[in-house]
Image (cartoon, rainbow, N blue to C red):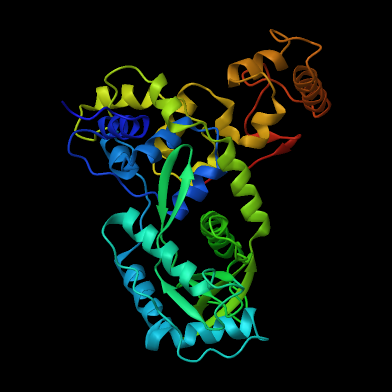
Length: 402
């Protein structure tokens, strides 16, 4: 007899069925997790990411391919820069950490660089937790650090996301002599005169905040819990050279927002249980069947999705076809209250529908009245009326375009 299926194994089996037979799970990285936390109301992205579905392949099969992806040149340049930063046992990286974040500590000499290799992401996460414990010195009586610097190169961290584990791999984590932990994020965009592109720095901060949350989960299992620093080190090329420079980035705000949004995510198993029997997101399915499967999960599209989700073009087309006001942006959607379609908005503005006591309806009708007054004051006449000559504007002759 086969062993009884537990709740955890049943969920993993269900998610494997959603991916399709023989389709490997796609890892959920910190960038995708930050984007998911930025839109916690989107059940579609939650189930697709939780099941490990390749959303880029899915978008291509739906006929709405995304423009996501990094060029091969940028990928190679980033790898070369990271290798330079971590050369010689991470000596340059530790020097930047010491100078930028912990100048009062002993200068780093020959740092410890533990081996983090293990079988599978679960094994690597366990090995990382053990290395962090050893480097912090929590096995000693004081538990206040070993007095040495330790560099963890590409550690593996685990974070529970809506009931499904996500394995994250930061560029590096540094353990200070006092036992504190710092996340290091290495990017290939330049830092010119000590500052970088604010949009790119913001994206790196949101990504690093996810790593900080995962590190805090590891620290909470130690006694005493070591401090996880909320200042991360952002390492970039200096000016137009390949020399590394660094800046401290405070991610307390991003960490708080991400933690709050992740807590709001509907559990993946609840979304999976609500799906019709036989739903599958395999890109090998016929387009009509695949479209029906995707549409079986409600989405929360917003224009911001275009910069964060591979399915954004598909969701935008569906949102526009349905006349949903979400296509106009989250701020507009929030102002319109219970009016969810463009048709509802126009009908309410023209007095054909809507509750007059609704503040959104009252505001729309007031705006429509003001627009009508402005057009009447400007002498506007509807197109096609008598005497309407398109070659005249405001009583002046307008020369035809040549």
